Image (tube, one colour):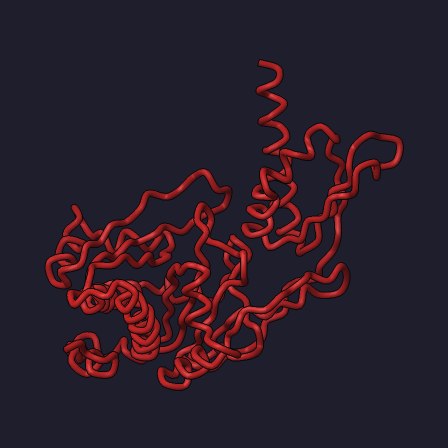
Length: 325
C-alpha cells in the first residue's frame, strides 16, 4: 500500500538540527513535460489551486513553449517555507507518479526520473568534498543522483540539472536531503528574487497559472516576478516592476536572417527565452533605410536588449567566419 503525501511528511520529521530551517524561505525548480504541466494545472486551474491551498506554497509554471534550454520541458517553481515546498512537491509528484503508474498497469512501482534545476554555484554543496555529500545522499535515500555538467552551449546559462531516479518515496527522501543542504546556502535562498536568464518564471497574478504575455513597447515591462517581502518572511509576496522597457532596431543582412530565426524559429525562441527580450523581424522587402538589411526590433530592458544583440551578432558572425574559411 502506497503512502500518501501527508503520511510521508509526517513520517519524515526533521532532525533537531534541521528544525530551524523548516520555516526558512526557500524554493525548488524542476522540469515537467508539457502534458504533465497541464495535469498539474488541472481544468480551469483547479488542481494547482488545490495544491497551493493544501501546501501553503506558491506554485508557478513557465509559460507554454517556454522551455529549459536544450529541452522541451517546462519549469515548475515551488516557493515558501521548507515544509510548504516539500508538501507542494509531494502533491505534484504523487499525482504525476499515480497517473503514469495507472498507464503502466503494473503492480510494481517503477523507478522514475526527476530533474531539478539548481544554480551552478550551489552544486558544490550537494557534491561535497571529494563527492562525500552526494554519496551519503545516495546511500541514505536509495535514489540515483546525478549532476549534469554546466552546458556552455547556451549563453548566460548558470543552472545545472540534478537528476533523481527512483521510486516516489526514494525521490522524496533525496529531495529532503538536497533541499535542506541548498537552504543552508544564503545565495540559493536569494536566487528566488532574481529573474531567470531564460525569460524567467512569471507571476500570473492568478494562483501561479501561466499566462500569455507580450512585452509592451513603451513604459514598463509589466511582468511580475515572484519576491519575498523585504523582511524575508515566507508566503508574503509583492509585485516587482521591471525597469523601463525600450525598443532598439538593428539591421541583419537578408541572407543571414535565417540564422537569427533558426530552423522552425528555434534560434529566435532560444534568444527570447534566455534574455527576456521580445524580438520582431521585418517582412521580406522591408529593409533598413538605404540598405538591404532586414529590421530586427528588440524590446525589453536595457540589459535584455544588450544580451539579445550580443547573441544575434554571435550567430551572424559565426556564419561569416565559416564563409571566409
